[in-house]
Length: 145
Image (cartoon, rainbow, N blue to C red; front, side, top):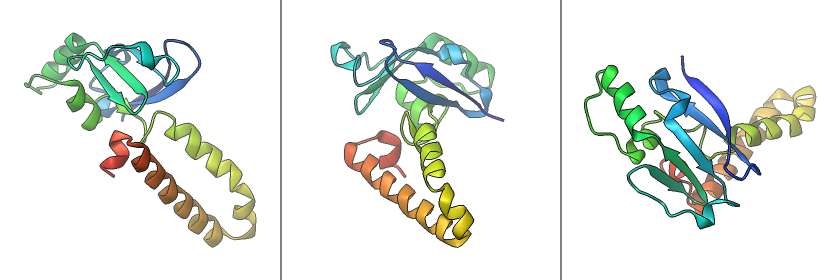
């Protein structure tokens, strides 16, 4: 079982969907999130932050270190490790992937009634197109997809 939650950014204009692999880290691992509106003024500290396009996650590395060590993960964690290993990262490929996917499902609802085959084909096609767009924008997890 994995924990996930929604976090408002510092300026309150946006929210990001976060995922916590295997419930190892608590929500308090994230100090704050910065969206494209509030991130331009932030000086990124590579020791506690990761920047993904115009979004920034600020981690409490002491909390991460403590909880990882309690689970037998005896290494010095970095923001990149937390993010890429999904211990604390976006739920999906971008901060809004959950919301965007839900909107796509709703948009294609009419196809379910007409043809499930067409629905699945269209859904898959649109998701693949989205992944390619996210790669072009430079979203870190999309680049690894």
